[in-house]
Image 1 (cartoon, rainbow, N blue to C red):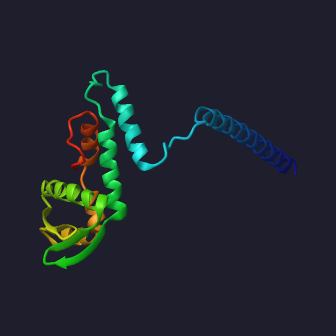
Image 2 (cartoon, one colour):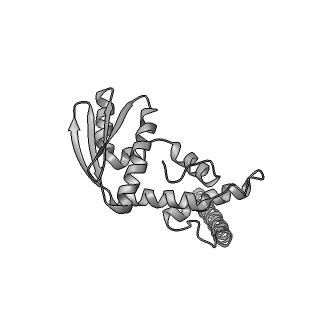
Image 3 (cartoon, rainbow, N blue to C red):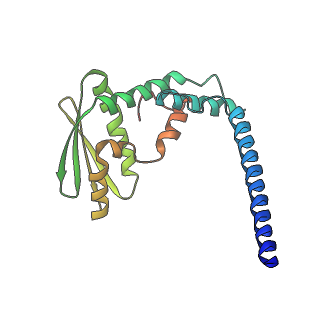
Length: 191
């Protein structure tokens, strides 16, 4: 009986101590979160995607002591981002499966047509730099036809899965191109 009493007392002591440790840990964790909340009291997102892209480039330019501000032209980047927006939100795409890939007839009017004519042929050139794709374009009424093929079944399935807009976003040249445009090394709204 004496042994049982000692064991019960020991268990209660262990539970009490572990509860104190949990309370201290919770308090410490809460204090940590409160401190972090104060440090991050402003939103991290800058808003609309085009604005965010411009803000990112501006931060990079300001952080680089070698920035030649006489060549910087953020308006050129903004016009390109507008063209990207017109393409993504306004272009009509008719998809046709072909042997080895897809043909995308991309059409639009006014600013959308301008964006199609500037960006689709330029991006086809970028896709051709990738070993898995072969891309070509042709002028069609009110737009551009993009034909893209792959060298194997997996790539053909990727082309079909990505579709036109996924393919337009494929590649890692976009960000470097945007930076070049902002620093006066790019040309207008070309992609």
